[in-house]
Length: 164
Image 1 (cartoon, rainbow, N blue to C red):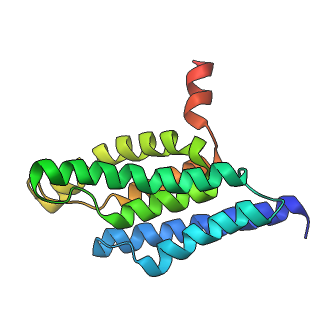
Image 2: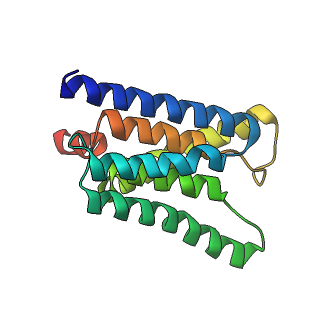
């Protein structure tokens, strides 16, 4: 199989894994370690050991650490102020996996897309569920959506902003 075909196969496999994780989180409010942790290691191995990598190994490792660390820090600050968690650590592991696959450079765009779509989607979710604004909703589907966009159309937002 030629390299472009292998890259497409890897991309589609990752897209399917992200869709599956989004579905699980949407239906159960959980992102299982049994799926997120292997996804982290597979992303690191892909970028460390194969010539088909999406990013260099340093960027992949930095993306993994910063992805997890950012969500952990935001939750730590929120928990310190509100005495309850604001985001699950499954989301931190999912962002770490996206960082491992796509690199640290992709994290700002992933977080921007996930946050904006999460804001709109969260409000729609709460309205659909007839819940109050302080009711939790799953953030994993929005991270997965943002990861898919960044995987298939890297730097889409920067490109769009430069054209405008």
